[in-house]
Length: 232
Image 1: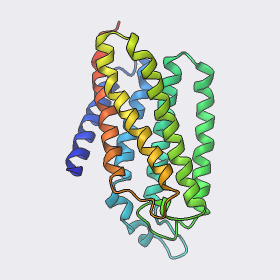
Image 2: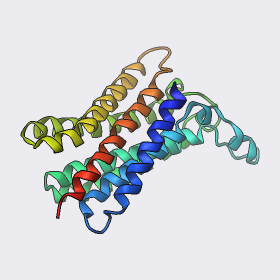
Image 3: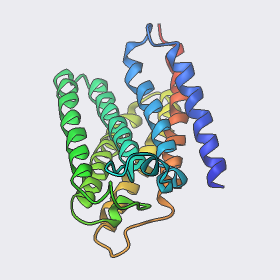
Image 4: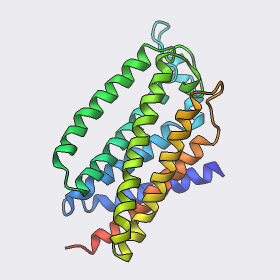
């Protein structure tokens, strides 16, 4: 079931990105969402439990170099980048130009902080299925990652909750899956943050829900493409 959901999400996301790339020049405002979908697709692959559990990279490097959980680091960085693009999309939708410019610097700082937290934690040395299972900087890493994605999805959810009731029918149809994806993403990150207070913070259903989020966003991306095609 999970594999089928992943394939469906990747197919829909790839379709959305492919279609929306044809609008890259004619509708510049659509670029941020197109990039977001590509990042979400990549993040879903990099955070697949099988890839997270793989230790081949750490074993393939010299003994003095430790890269355990490296795919977890990259996957979370990609997801945080997607969160940044979501906030940029929201900012542009409301005409907040200064906000958009500031977000680039803010998310650059967040990315650097995550890399530093990973490097100074036990993560490079102790393979684990979830960085939240480790203490110290690794757990702070999860706080930063999950908190950032939570804020981005909450912003999308709040923006759509305000704008959808006054939108036309075709726009509501195109954006409703995005609202569902944002709700899934926000709820999932909130549960992950709360789980950090428990003795066993790992949730086996977290990744399938993340894939469901990608599918919802991607579906909205496809529907949004046809909406944009009708614009001059």
